[in-house]
Image (cartoon, rainbow, N blue to C red; front, side, top):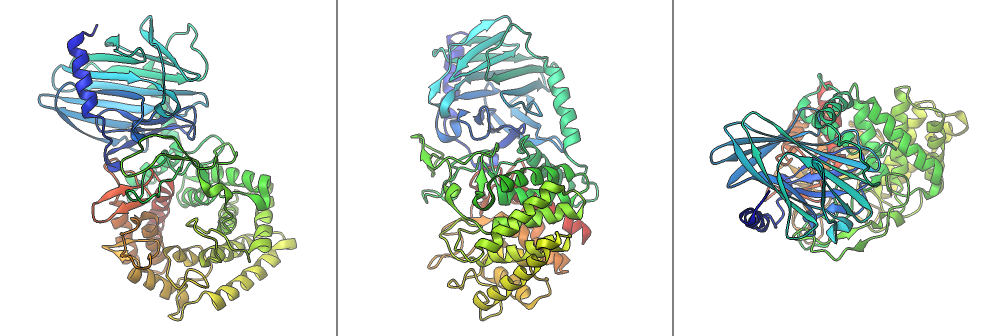
Length: 594
């Protein structure tokens, strides 16, 4: 058992670990139902349970309660990497006299009301001592669990309507608070030890805790079948990692959450803190294109089509830009009253639920056309395509929030994406009763956009009354609204590179009176768009340069956030941002073809 000296050691370690880390230093574990952020000190900084958008049980990322940490006793540095094609994180602690490996994962695939965190630890250079602490705190860390009680070789606890069971071979005691376990792990060289934490919605019976070896085997096998080999794709390891991120963050319903976290600031004290633990229709379409781009990625395409069609068929013209994974509405924004990540606030929910975004219906048509081109679109898919066409025909003249979810206007990007989607679905054999009308509507829209949104320099501008260039306008040529050789495409590509680029990173658009990077970071998805645009225009060298510059902008775990601070070389915003990983896959596949 642990004694007073051990309690003091753990207390001192907890004080040292109170501050969060830079976002680039976190790894994410995911099982399709929820995700956990792991910090470099061996702690679980964030985990929502039972699902992605439910309250967090470990909320240290936002300065709240809940902790599960195992780290060496004494001074150490750490690093790690994902096992190829998985979200199994292999962490290495280097101490003053030893090297300790820790293998971490969520048991995959996950279960709806049960989460299992796996840890296997081994000392490589002699015996070693580690200290650990486990404290459950439901409702974003505000409701402490407990008390812990021992039952055989396991410890059990309840918190906020869910239940936990933890087992592992170590010296353990209940800490000064009944809700906390403190423990010491003594490792013998070459003798790995397993630690299994189970969270579930129902109470544990008298069943024997699951065997760690079986859980590891099942998880390894599931990852092997979930991620394509990507043998013919450049940057294959990065592409496989991105596929693993997409698979790990795709729910059984087929929807892929935009990110695992909420309220991580895009710019310190700027008030731009959003909750991305939901499924965006547009992002899901991007993910479907990524699946279609690589052999073996078809299940991702199928999931995206299935989830998107369900939303469009259920809600029609009232379809929302984002949903909870089960298709229910996203909650409205609110504050938790927590400290938040430094420089940010503690927002949950998202205002997007009340927006109309025209471009998402064009994106739906592009996704369904892509599926049809691979003979993977069923009758429901064609019905959803007809619904999306009808919404575009009915609402194409309205002001809307657009891709960047800003004040309503007649955004050029939105209407160009609708042109691309209408053309694409018609080319794939849309039924005659509306397929011919789709082509006519595309021609009408393009003519209107050309009349009202063509800048005097020959490029596209953001809106009829906004002459600025916008990086999203690159998608007009990427998705086929017009060809890369069209003079408007060439002029737009050139203007984006000239006006929105700093140190080979692109920003969305310029903010009047401010320099690039002053109001927000570079948007990494824009860089991959530029790579795709150059490649499809036949400029392989420039396309490759944009691709390589961007894929180097990840954190140490190989994960991307939405934005990148060019000056400080830091990730900004929620993590991991799945649409950036999706565009990495699509750009890599295009580079391989080029």
